[in-house]
Amino acid sequence: MANDSNPNRSGVDGARAQVLLQTERAAFIARNPHSGALAQRASQHLLFGVPLHWMNDWGTPFALQVAQAAGAHLLDADGHDLSDFCLGDTGAMFGHSPTPVARAVARQVAHGITAMLAGADAAAVGELLSQRFGLPYWQFAMTASDANRFVLRWLRAASGRRKLIVFNGCYHGTVDDVFVDLEEGHPVQRSSLLGQVHDLTANTVVVEFNDLVALDAALSQGDVACVLAEPAMTNIGMVLPEPGYWQAAQALIRRHGAALVLDETHTISCGPGGYSGAHGLQPDAMVLGKPVGGGVPCAVYGFSAEWARRVVQAKHDAPEGHSGIGTTLSGNLLAMAAMRATLGELMTAPVYAGMLSTASALAEGLREVIARRRLPWCVTQLGARTEFQFRATLPRNGSEAGAALDPELEHLIHLALLNRGVLITPFHNMMLVCPATTAADVQRLLVAFDQVLARIAVA
Image (cartoon, rainbow, N blue to C red):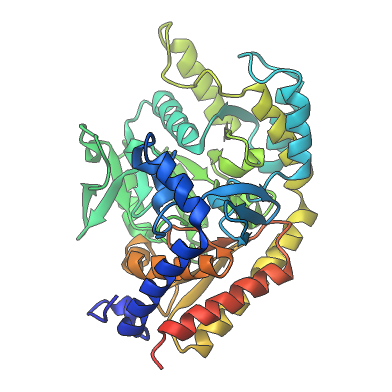
């Protein structure tokens, strides 16, 4: 953490930060003996000591262990109550075990979990999705990764085109096709992707977000099946679209005969209809994962009437056999019950109104703390989602957002917040509020944040 040429460290005293890091690591170990013991036990049989290796991304000396979760709070194995602003990285966007979902799931468990058959909830969920997002036809998956993967297959089959356009720095789950970045203007396969033996750059075109000229040039080749995008980027640090960008981009995509697929898995934080609904976008297809089941693993994807017609025709024209689309548990009875409860009782305008108000108070409080500590950082809000970034102005694209990332500094801040009873997302500096997040939770975060910055800012 020593001061170096990293521009993200401007305003940060490297020596003080290094002292704080050692102090916080020791404090975490001392205050979490039961978590430490459980982590040690898990390491005997779990790869990386955790069920999913991402669970080690918090910057803690060992994985924190959870005893229970409810609303906007976690109780860890050592009995510490934590205000949770990570919320399962959006999986629990409406809180942990929200009552409508818990009730629906308990009822459905008693009447069957999976049967590879439809039930009454399926028709109801399809109606709710169509009403909510304006796309008439839907299918289901277990995760947004699967949903994105399936949409790409359907649209390639329906269009007869092979290529995909994504934005530099994007993330759409574990879909291999999207792991292509721009380095000095050239597409390269992301070096962190393990075990990939195919050249992804052959069929994936990558451009910068907010660059209409580059998007038009990529589409003009006439071989693009679809553009897959978050309407606002969230996984490399938040990047908002510039005014008028999506209106112009939609026109370009349609003029060139491609489809626009919007992945609203994170941007559903903007309102009941996601970013698309809040800003009047009209995608040809949409994907929504994580929060749509209130924490129960499931995802959905929908098509416009025209693309649905082409998708169905592609299936009818194909030989008999496995399409490569779908899994046995897709659209299971339990997931359908959870989605019906979430869509009908949680993803409502009144619920969002409270969340957006709380998030605005959090964003303004973060700006005040950062200004008081004279740090050249900015704060971005995207509905119920907020983030501080290590740069003075909002990033315009993935390259600018990526350049502002500083995992070492992020881990220090996250660890210090955790020791003060606050959990934020381990991937960059993102925070999410849910209906159960209170003003006291926000104040707890702001006080802890100010205490941490006071320890590392240049005096």
